[in-house]
Image 1 (cartoon, rainbow, N blue to C red):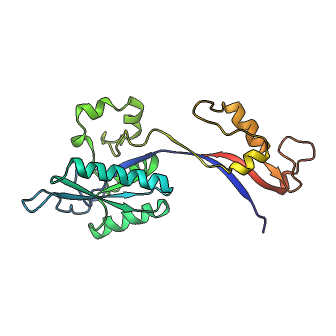
Image 2: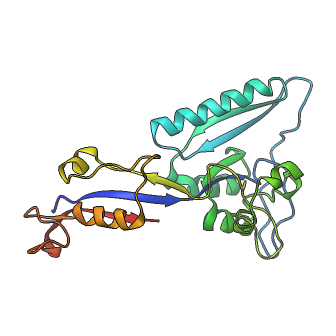
Image 3: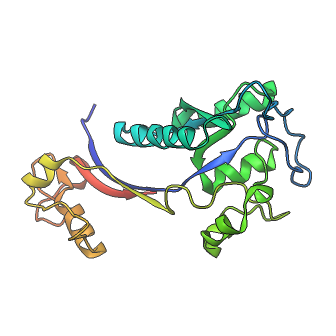
Length: 233
């Protein structure tokens, strides 16, 4: 088996989705199956409303930053709303939500997942709630028209994901500094970002065959590539 190494630049869009199996259920999309019964999240004299945030973060820094936001929120809304952070797995999101919808609950109220495709499909199936009743004028003003349309269900105009969470899109850069150094490449920084032309030139330098020749170099063997860099989405 060949030992391939891949350096990837991955662009993803993530958003917060409110699950119908936990929160109050908005009207379902036309012809959509009935949403799962809502869990009781109303405030009571015995304590604050408790909700859960299921996150698909996987880098230690991403996880710690989300936990810090949850802690900050809990401090600001102490006695009213308390959020429990639930660590999830990106690959298990579909199974997690589907299982909870089928069981009628038992899963987090809010799920962090991709806005494109996932949220639209989940709303069609009745798994998540329409957020329009919960978006005030201030929140709407923070949303661009492109963001709003990207999170809008076309049949009834439902907003299926928070439109201002974590950027749009989030450009995630994964690289091995030793490989860049060996190729004589200086990593991009905020002060000195790469242009797309520089990106592709560097991608060629980092795409190496079994003999150590890079893409574009005489003698490069495309059938014996041991390391490559590619943009992914």
